[in-house]
View (spheres, helix red, strand yellow):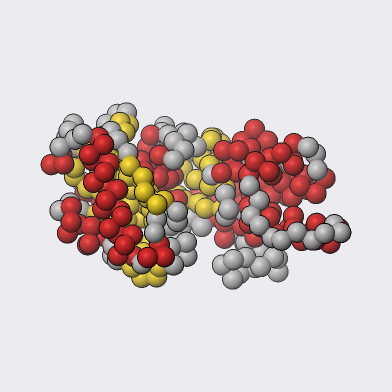
Length: 316
């Protein structure tokens, strides 16, 4: 058991990362490899690149492949974890794609898939910010708002594997249109794409030279907020308030021990954003509730770590 190794893979829209992991009392990252995701070349090309990345990570780690017990892959979008099918991954342009058998045939080891955010939360629960908690809610705030639930140390998937979609909890029944097609989702107010939309809509009304929409970078949002721009301040305060209110509903429903906040916005503006979120949440949770708010610790390795842990859980 002490020599057992699990490989975690993070399949992103732009890059593929893989790491062999030894999952003892402490996490040991034995090596890593990274390659671009060539999604426009079709899923079979991406599968070949996943296999290549895994093999490179094994070579970089200088380990004996016979100690590798399983591979876990974190994929963007909806995943049927029972059948190992990627149901819909907009970033990759995939629907109903089954990749594990192709990888298993090449590597001769079991391969298990799950949603990348779910695995990121599992990684933080096992070896990161929430390592002392069994019941954890994770919120990753970036371009969108991803969420995941780990209950009693295992990912809670729900009936059709969509549990934890905090970004699509409705906060206004007739609110703004979301990318998912519904109205009033949290993400349609607080996702970075929504903040960018509102920023450009406002300035196109007030500026003499309209700007072309583009996704704002986190560092630009941080600087504009730090400069006390009144409209950016309004957008950020509103976003944090909406996230805090949504988390209050989650706390009142699930009573988690820990909430982990991560993603690009938190990484860039943790000191500014987290107190605002906590303040809004505390106004709406049960007074008897006890929940810790922590910042994700594992960074790029959260999904990789969770993927390795998930592979171990599925194997044992």
